Structure formats: structure tokens, C-alpha cells
Image 1: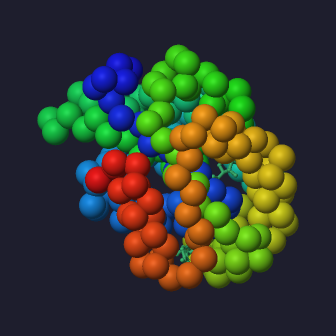
Image 2: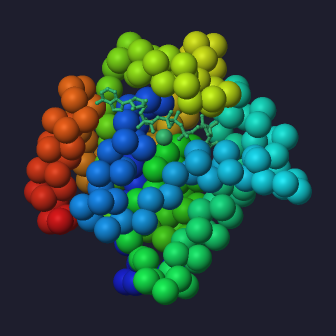
Length: 198
Ligand code: UP5
Ligand code: MG
């Protein structure tokens, strides 16, 4: 994709930090097309005839990162579909990706370089509480204490290095993800405005 035609913003943060929740606000106000890597993987897992269904299922349950070929292909397909659609959507908010160094390097070099990364910063106890609460009704196979602990471990060991790399490149907009949904969003809008994103 040509970065002159396509804008990519990543939204990253630990499990339960509020990526999906804040993405909905950003879509409403900034006209982004929201692409959640996790949602795309769950959809593919449930798609009849998918050759990756069982693989995705076991990786998600164990909080591990699905091999990037699968995820990148799903993202590229969604971007292509959105670009070719009637309203030619070309501003993408990519939620929960890249979360491993190889994905980050590949996507930046071979798919499309990102404009910036929104990082939602929340402590584990807060994220755990949110996810256990959501787990009562979400039906997500990874919203249980055992899987959540594994997701936290993967986040620290595998995903934070990606955020740190983007931070060194000066491309991270970091926002504390404590407080109410509205309070967090207000701070996020302020930080984006400082970067000239409106
Ligand atoms: N909530 C949100 N904000 C709140 C607030 N301020 N106060 C109180 N409650 C708040 O929020 C989580 C819950 O908290 C919700 O109930 C919400 O109402 C409440 P949400 O917005 O859903 O948080 P989010 O950060 O999106 O949490 P999510 O669980 O989706 O994060 P994960 O990163 O764990 O999940 P994701 O779907 O991105 O990935 C799942 C798995 O897919 C990964 O573990 C991995 O196995 C796999 N995956 C890959 O392999 N590769 C990828 O590239 C991406 C995913
Ligand atoms: Mg999410």
C-alpha cells in the first residue's frame, strides 16, 4: 500500500487496556476504519473451511501470537476490501497489531509504514479486573484467569519490545488507561492534537 494514499495508526496496550473501547470512539470522531487483529483472527477461526481454525484456537487460548503470515494476510485483505469499497476508506486504525517484532518489521517494510502508535498504559490488576468482569458474558475462550495470565506474560515479553522500538523512533502517543472511558478518551484526543492528528 502506498503511504501517500493510506494512513495506518496502530493502537496497542495490554489485554484489557481498552483498545477496542477507545477504537470505537476514534472511529466515530476521526473516520478511521477499525481493524482489530484479534477480531479478524476470531472470525477466521469460526469461518467454515478455514485451514487455520484449529491453529488459531489453540494460540488464542494460550495467549500466544499466531504466526504472522496468517494475521498479516487477514489485515491486508481487509485493507484491500475497504480501499476498493464505494467509500474508499483509506485511514486504518489497526488494533492489537503488531505485537511481535517480526510482525512489526515486516508490516512496516512490506505492507505500509505507520504514522504513529497509540499506547494505552494500564497496570495488570486493573486489566485483570476488567477482563474477568467481561469474561462473565463475553464467551471469549481467553477471558479466564489462566489464559489472562498467559496473555500478560506474552504482552510483557513479546509485545512491549515493539512499543519500545516505536517509542525510540518517536512514534508513540502514550496515554494512561486509568479512569473512566470518557476521561481516557479526552486525554487521548489532546495527545493526538499535539501530534497534528485531528
Ligand atoms: N473497559 C474498557 N475501558 C474501561 C474503563 N476505562 N473503565 C472500566 N472498564 C473499561 O476492554 C476490556 C473490558 O474493559 C471491556 O469489558 C470494556 O468494556 C472494559 P477492551 O476495550 O475490550 O480492551 P482491549 O484492550 O481491546 O482488550 P482485549 O481483551 O481485546 O485485548 P487483547 O489484546 O488481549 O485481545 P486481542 O483480541 O487483541 O487478541 C487476542 C488474542 O489474539 C491474543 O492473545 C493472541 O493470541 C491473538 N493475536 C495474535 O496472535 N496476533 C495479533 O496480531 C493479534 C492477536
Ligand atoms: Mg480488543
